[in-house]
Length: 103
Image 1 (cartoon, rainbow, N blue to C red):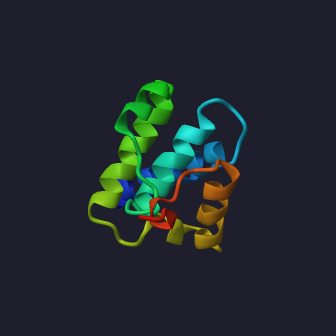
Image 2 (image 1 turned 60 degrees about the vertical axis):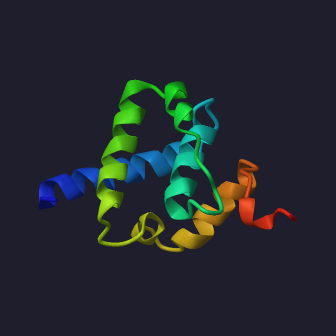
Image 3 (image 1 turned 90 degrees about the vertical axis):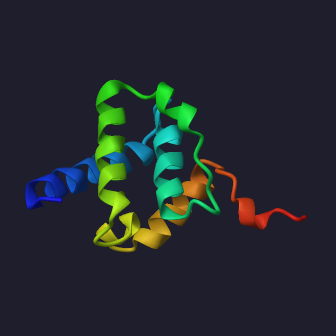
């Protein structure tokens, strides 16, 4: 990945986090996507949720997904206290943690 592509992907990640922290109808879906990248075993992301996103937001998701294909670091590590931010997203949006279920 070129430096310019990586930089564009990090900018897209910043935009997505800002959306996930917001209150629009798309925020929960973006939060779910980010949580799926953060820990896909805990937070499963339904790909059909992409259909709920505006084109620009969907394109940002694709940029971030491409960056995460061979990551320099995990997505939450691009932010100070990223792990705490991502965990709070899960709580705020009540996104199911599959590892917390009893068998």
